[in-house]
Length: 305
Image (cartoon, rainbow, N blue to C red; front, side, top):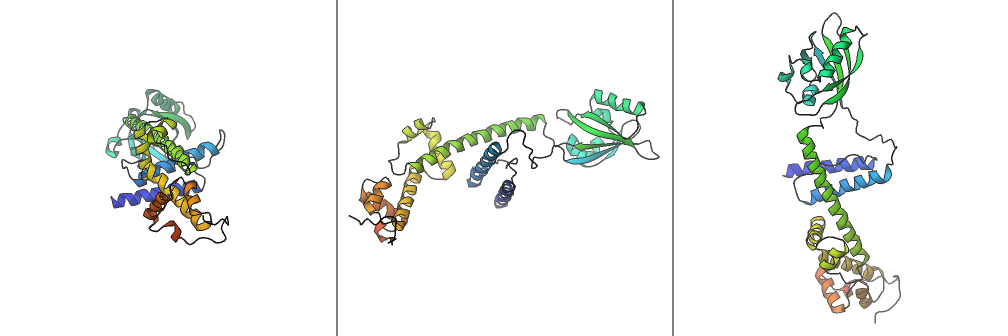
């Protein structure tokens, strides 16, 4: 588990470096874990997607976009189009083992129309090498159209077929799995946006009493369970605890950097009862508000009443 988490952290670092250099087209694969790292992954992916949508307008050429084709590959065929040899990435692209491909007729992995087109090129004595588009039929995958060049070896009847193999992304099953993943990722993104709105709301209303969970859920158009559990998932604390901690931290800052009376600070941070504020403050920081050394040249010169 430790090694797996280290790999996840490396992936996060790589993603952040990509974002730092302007590449927002990547995303970190989601895992089945429900932990802090996974929460971070969801948020980073969300930021990358939002940045991509806001920065790159239609028609903008992004030089970080992933290339459609990833590897130059070669078939060696005999005069009857049987596969005699090939480069290793061919096997991955087609979904066959290397032993399955050796001596397999090329028409077995391309469409009938492509087989006829290939035969026509060779029969019409077209000057070789020639360019031709063939529709390959990978194992358990949808057909893939690939641009190829066809030629012959010197002093040999063998045929050379060069192509650039696209990534395998059109499998029926991976496609289904990817759709489920995208749906799952979309749900997490929506949850993150919802909790972000709640987070912003709390920070903007620290001086006011926190509304009940029922009122908050109505305010944000969701149910109490989703709001409560969603907030705990992303911030690892309850809504009220977060609200209380944030107003106490703001109160601490105000005490340390201003000379505003303590009772006023307590009211400004949503505490109508000073003893309750003092008790909460001491429980949070381990000492009372009056024990903090105050800034004598603070923002106000009012004395405590």
